[in-house]
Amino acid sequence: MNDFYNEAVWEKAWKEESDTVVKKMQRAGIDPSRSFDPKAKIFNEQSFNEEGKKRSKRIINWLEGQGVRFENAAVLDIGAASGVFTVPFAERGARVTALESSPPLVELLKENTAKFADGQVSIVHEPFEHIDVESKGWREAFDLVFVSMCPVIHDWESVEKVLFSAKEYCYISMPVTHNEHSLLEEIWPLVTTGQPFKKKPLEMGYLLHLLYLKGYSYESLVTREMQTKEVTLEAALQEVMTLLGHYGLPADERTVQMVSSYLEQTYPSGQVAVQTGGRFGKVLIRLQDQSMYSKED
Image 1 (cartoon, one colour):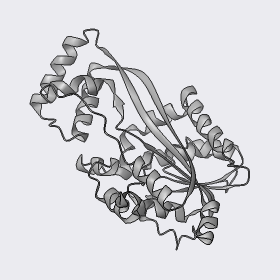
Image 2 (image 1 turned 120 degrees about the vertical axis):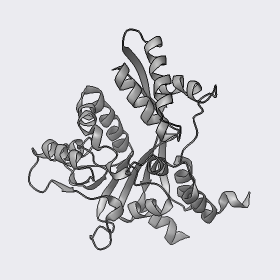
Image 3 (image 1 turned 90 degrees about the horizontal axis):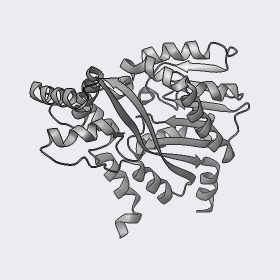
């Protein structure tokens, strides 16, 4: 029971956790800072279609409901992608520093923010991991630091680096469990000799518990969000093989043939309806309350 309240134990456990999103990417040979390069265009389209805009608005409405104000606020958007949140933040009057490491996403970000006045959106093309926030002059420089589903959060040290730049609020969202993918779950027993697919909890629990132990005030929310898409057999095969690689399963020629045969037999129309999504956690941390807590403590 003592370990339950021991910050050092939780920090060490998170740092040594082998199943974090970042470590899974690295095992699959993927650079987390460049993971969106191949899908930049489609991600941009999904971000700014009707459903994507509704999702962004829901999150911003939740932030405003917690007291966050954007008019004249300084916002650091870490992992800004093509501007899915940078754009609506700026539309609400914020001055946004948009940090993005993917070259194709940076080009789309420039296009999507070109309509704003000079200086309202500043784009920094650099991985957050490479930035010295002290020498950059970012110490408590932003009213809100915003990190949405970005792999810069992978242990408590990375959280502290993000918090270092925030003056009032810090928003972090992360997956709560492995992403749900109906076709992967369907294929899984085929390539694992009958073993069912099990959804493991991810590192959101470390984040929330350490915030609790360290005396931070925060609001959190967990939602389940799903969407359905139709893809060709070729696209379905490519997607499943990539996902199997993420889980350390063989993506050799034998597996490719087995999965390909299954898809052809099961989906003779040539189209596969795939449900994707999962449970996602959102947390808004109040830095002013932390300062008060520390003084009283």
